[in-house]
Image (cartoon, rainbow, N blue to C red; front, top):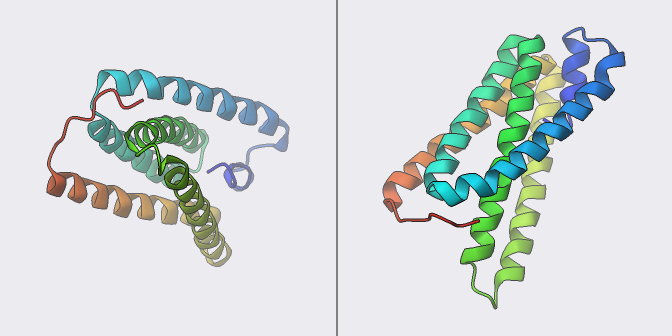
Amino acid sequence: VDEFWQLYLDAAGFPASIFGVVLLLFTLLRMVGASLGARFAAKWRVDGLLLVLSAVLTAALIWAAAAKSLLGLAAMMLSCATSETMQVIATGYLHRRADDAARATIESLASMMERVSVIGMGLLFAAVAERHQIFAAFGALATVAVLLTGLFVLLHIRRGRKDTRGAV
């Protein structure tokens, strides 16, 4: 969403004069999302949190694709805050659970995989936006989020529920 919100606002008819205010709001909401991550992980199980947050993120992307208005902008902001919360929780979990000898390698690989996935999503987004419109590209992001959330749910059910409280 970070790379595409300006295109969304332009296509939805928002004036460029509000872009600075919107960027400020995105930044503030990311800060709130990051601060909530550690608090949430201390209170609830990490696997359950990530399931709920994945569902919220997916719903927000669907909402952004469909709304094409101020409501869509609000949904994008929710997706950014939720994404930041998930990032803090997942990074904290990985950091605490990884073996000391392999932690740096594991965290480096996770960072690389994140970058590759962002590139892949960017290419998908651009391809859909060029053939259709920006809102359809957000729909493509939502579709990928639905698939990944579904995969996460299946893996969660298959793995069983182990206690992962306090991972951050």
